[in-house]
Length: 412
Image 1 (cartoon, rainbow, N blue to C red):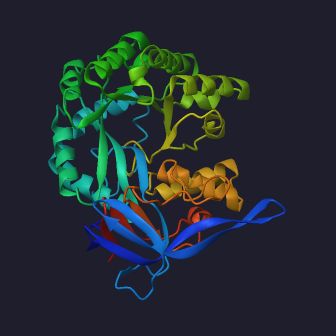
Image 2 (cartoon, rainbow, N blue to C red):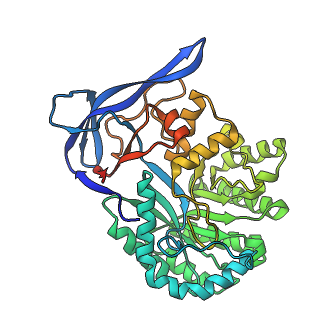
Image 3 (tube, helix red, strand yellow):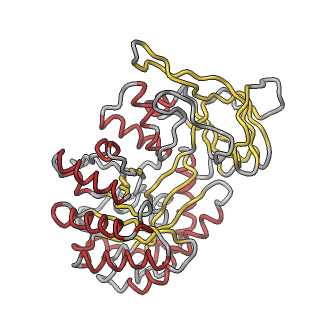
């Protein structure tokens, strides 16, 4: 997909006829609807400068009554490894384990690197089509890729810098010690653009939870990075890894709020009581969970995690690659899937589900008081053809415009 928008404005300008949510409608203390009104929005220096009464007669850019929402954020994706832009390819039944996939990657990465810049850009354009302006993207660090995956990803992001932003995770997809990746991880950790140290199933891939986690934690501490590890392991080893990381975060306050476990499928196999206990521990260590909301018999305890104040982030993970063919690139679809899975069907519950696309930013607080946008907020928004957040989530409404750092892009 080519970039689906055209630059409409940047710098200092105003919008008129912008629809914003203003409150909830109630019947017998139950939320039955959402009220909205039209406003004028001033943009300057990448920020929302002011939210004012609407002036339909002004020369401002006409938002045409479309609903303004916070732009979406995908917090787990692999921009460097997509097959998007290449001919269709479904998954092979021959590759069943992570180690099977590692061997396959070692074969195909040299050829894929030849076109990885353009394919990353196409995947970014797909995400922008659905209103995403920011991602947390993992990139391969392994002996086959060296630092080439990072270099190519950085080039793609540089080419998109006016309309898209990312934070980067150095991801040892082939293990830290299973292949000779530890020296490369140390090299990547020194780079300014790398914000997080990644990891992968320490016991099943590298044969030791403690050795791998200690390496990862120390690398993060030495270079002031966050941690975001892939953990597919379930049962005892999965829970031991999660608890080990929580312990390290409690011991090292510098890691709190910056440490995440992606996937964490072990949590989906706990009893309700066990889920509450680990949620309490995760919250105490300020360790977050990043989920791609899997559905293959694996239902994550997201409501319980949220109840205890755990930072739950959501991402697409794979979008048409050799690991999975089901990722759409749409964060609004992820919010919709979560709402359907957990029964968030009322006006109020659907409006709250928007947080899984925006990563916790909501126009209205729990009481229906307008809390976004305000002067000083980041000028990162979408305009969508919906009457309210609940409708946008339920119908996965079309995105008409995307704004990043105050740069407004309108759908072609």
